[in-house]
Length: 336
Image (tube, rainbow, N blue to C red; front, side, top):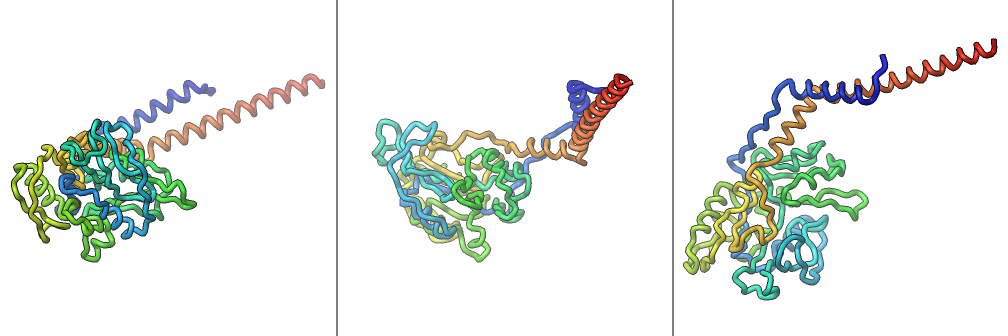
């Protein structure tokens, strides 16, 4: 039986449809926040841009210090940003300064703000769903999203999957790795807190249980500007300092974004102005992971594909053999 290319793809499409369509593809449930998950609450109103957290992060992770360059502007953001670099293969934690257009150098402007960029440690991470070799994993107790360089194959799918554009690749290394904040997991295992929170002099980076950090975030959103309030330093349940409350934009960023994150933020400026993406409330990992697992369940679809390719190769070589045999018979007849 002969089969042309169009017929072959029709057969493969039908087979794949049967394999995948045997049961309807339904997105799985969102993964839940572990009860004792830990994280960070960043308060842009308390941040003074000292970048002590940047220095502490580099020191804790043995990374080179970046030199500060001229003021830059972030792509797609109206306004000026300070610093000549962003998150990179050399930087896991970055403080940027936003100044509204028209007052580019006045940090006393009401719309001026700092913003801290680092891994969001999503509750249902897209990066983990996209990784084909489990180089990225989520701790079932702390919720920390960790990276294993020994398992990584350098495909960089995690970079494409992350809605916050966090993971970076070491393009300048002979043996490159993915670089992202891992919430100082070794320090936490020894009873310490993340280096960025430990170094912050104002409490702008606050460590604690995510559920408690959410409560603290909402407490700040309800504060009346000008009133004196107590702000925890470094970690919840520790030392505090009194400061005058400033006006907050009414949104706890990270509470619902992409299914929720363990890195939360409050600020006095809308987050889209600070360069934070307006991602939806559901993690894309729900659907993408379900599709992947359904497609490869029992290796039915790949098996069909392999069988089709083997059959096509056999058919092609058989046709060639038949043609060679016909040519041979024709030459014998001519010789006679």
